[in-house]
Amino acid sequence: MQGDEKRKLNVKILVSILVVIFSLTSLVYLLTALYFRKRFLPNTWIGDVYCTGRNADSIAADLRDKIIIPDITVSWNDGEYEDSFISSSEIGYTYDLQASVYMAMNSQNTFTWPAALFGKNVLHLTPVITYDEAALEEKVSSLDRIKDEKNTPVEYRIVFDPSEGYIEKDTHLHRLDTDKVLTDLKESLSEGRLRLYVDDSYYMDHPYSSDEISEQAFYKKMSDYLNTDLVYDMGAEKIPFDISLMSFLIKSENGRPVFDNNGDFIIDDDKVTEWVEDLCHDYNTYGLDRTFEASNGKTVTVPCFYSDYGTQINEKAELAFLKNALKSEETWDGIADIHIPEYEHEGFVRGLDDIGDTYVEVDLIDQYLYYYKNGELLLETDIVSGDIPKGWATPRGTFAVYGKDVDQYLYGRDYIDFVSYWIPYFRGYGFHDSDWRDEWGGEIYTYDGSHGCINMDKKSAETLFNNIEIGTPVIIYDY
Image (cartoon, rainbow, N blue to C red; front, top):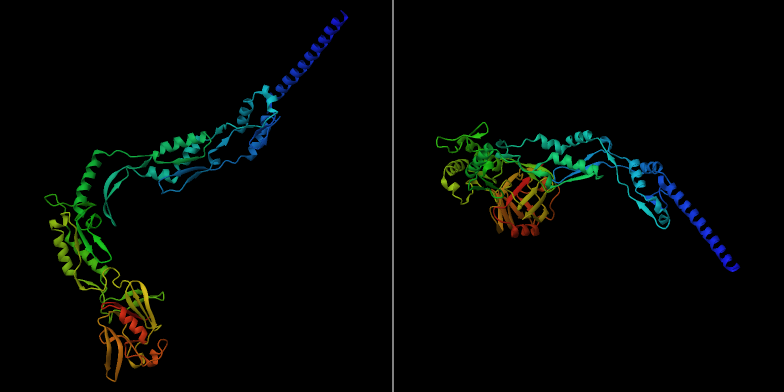
């Protein structure tokens, strides 16, 4: 009996101890849970801030020192505008960190603190964002892209441009929806996103009014007439008689075409005459001084006094042709009419640059010759030009090769010389070898120059002779 009583006593004692232990453990558990009710649980981090046992106010203060809010960016996709920026401080854009931290702390289950002892817990803040909407609207309205959109009225009309002729001014298409930009930017900022990409979804096409639709039909009719089949072939340049040119050749008043009694467009003969005069002014070089970019990098003026090379359009013939062509139905029959002007003088090549990339260049100051063929410098050599003190100056000007001969005797009043290669370009002047010399270039022409021809060594003369064509331009200058 004593043994049973002893065992019962031991069980009671053990139970009492366990009850005490459980009670103490529960008390510690509850007190600790109560402690963390206004503090962060063990092993808790927000970003790189250690939060364990700390209250929300101190954590918010630490985070406030670390957060830098960048400028707000609006990116346009139309390629014409760079990104726009709005200062976050100017619209009062802030994160309410204290509220965010309190929200994060209140999201904890304090009764799970024992589990927090065994692993790192990283909390993410739900931002509480505030900003001044009125200030934002003002800043958005001041952006260049927004201002340009609002200052450009939605319209369709036909205008006469002084440089392009009759053109359509149509601002209906691909218009920026400024209200959508502002609405979506507000939404982005409220969600903590500080960049808005304005893609194609922000653009729209506005409908046309009945009057604008009538104007479009009129422009099509005008385009059908003013876009002709005629093309002037000027060589390097082609001049189509399209709407951008024909706009200037029809009668107009107050920026609108004038029609005859049949409702047809009227060709303005005075404007046609003016156009032909301008064409001749742009392309004619014959009998005129010309500027030339020399191989030494200088821009020189080549005088016209002796020049017999260049372009001269037959102005009278072209005026007659064009007036007739603009009254002919063939100019609108859908078949291309390529017209090469009639010339009184035609260069080796046709175009605004009638020298081209194949020519001989003679620098009388440096006493040097360059020969370019198809843009490649094929020959460069020292020369001896006319003896100025003796009155045998080499004529300056622009000329053209008109012959090629070998084994020729050159005669003068007091000389006769044999040359192996003879390339004349103006009257009795030409390029040739000069075996009676053993040096060229420098100042030789000032005391032992030629009778006006361009002397060079035999090898250079042979190279020039074998590669040059009759008609090749020759530019001779000093400066």
